[in-house]
Amino acid sequence: MTAPAPRAGAAPGLLEMSGVHASYGRISVLHGVDLAVGAGRIVALLGPNGAGKTTTLNVAAGLHPADRGDVRVGGRALAGADPVELARRGVCLIPEGRGIFPNLTVRENLRMMTFTGADRAAVEEIAYARFPKLAERRRQTAGTMSGGEQQMLALARGLATDPAVLLIDELSMGLAPLVVAELYELVVEIARTGVAVLVVEQFASTVMEICDLAAVMVNGRIERVDAPGDDLLADLSALYLGSAT
Image 1 (cartoon, rainbow, N blue to C red):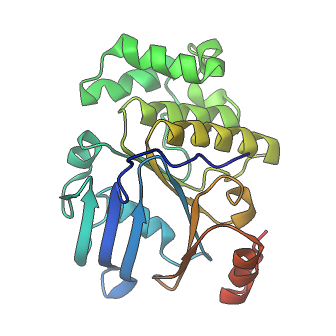
Image 2: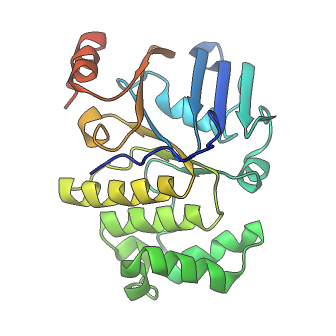
């Protein structure tokens, strides 16, 4: 897999988070997160469990409030905006666990995305063109599909909103390596259309080949942002007691 080349004239930070603090009750989780993702770029957010990675995504998507700090999309401050407003502004979250409706068919899942105002036929056409397997499964109940197919459906639902920013939480969770490789090839294709992609992964090796930058988060802080490479993998092992692979 190869990372997408940056697009000429792409904005340096389509998604920008500056000095973001967040907490759950009295427990502080994020301590001044600074992070930027440019259009057409893939940034991997790496770190141990409990580092604050998912909270970072949830703040960016409007699902969790920031105590202070700025969240900007396309230069516009959107901290405090509700998730529906952020979705309409082009921010899409693919949550851990896929976030599909397992008791609905593939077609019915896609129809749920017309709340954004998108045409139903257009949503299905785009989804089936990018994910031919879903066309074959359009009448199948989503919960009976394989994990990889369910993750494809989650991606297809997200793309139905025509996102500018795509936030992905643990795409590889519970999937076989070959399926993960196929899904990340799709993520590369999505980025090549100009979408800014921020992906959280527990295991660095699954995204190192396709990301432009990797941000290492430890204890609610970004400790390092760098191009992917062996030295970064080595640093990951040193920064927290866990395997980078």
